[in-house]
Length: 237
Image (cartoon, rainbow, N blue to C red; front, side, top):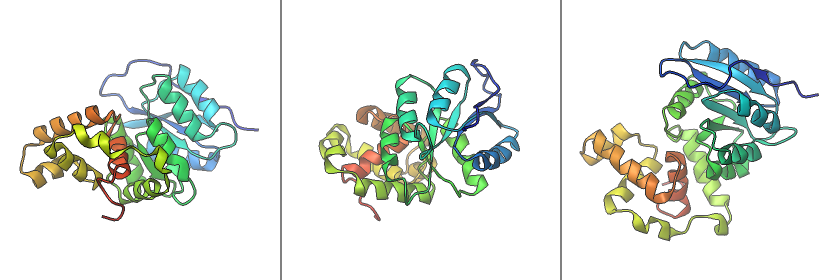
């Protein structure tokens, strides 16, 4: 029998200086326990809830607040992809990071298209997991780690053509915005893009915002997926 979800914090509006509230959704209790141990050791974050499948997670997140959700893909009961789609459609502000084994979970692209903000490998080093949680909570997507870049490349190759974004979606971008998107797809952050283009970081942020708006992308991850789908970036480039 699946364990009942662990719940601590009712929905409230958190001040900026409160810990990042993390929810863990995985049907393996040992995985949740390991992640919780690492997360709760940090002064700026805490695990506020745990669930063993997607259905439990949706019920839990409907009543209890979380800023970031670490969501497994393959679970008994509702899978993580379906849960991510439903959570996004519900208007939840919680950011979803997909937990994947990379070589097996080929349909995780569906979750990214539905609004997930990034990927984590299940064997990710603790410091990378913590950095990903902070990055997503700050409103960015987890695209810089090499494992995520490789995964996006892999998924963009296996996605059926009819599900890919057509190249014409890039027509609304200026030359500079295309250049910024290209650097985003290569895993460059705003500071690095500013150095590459010899412009101020504030200028880069403006370009990134316009790219996301024109592409209808929720965050950098979705924008990078579109860059691969449209052929702006080639896998392995």
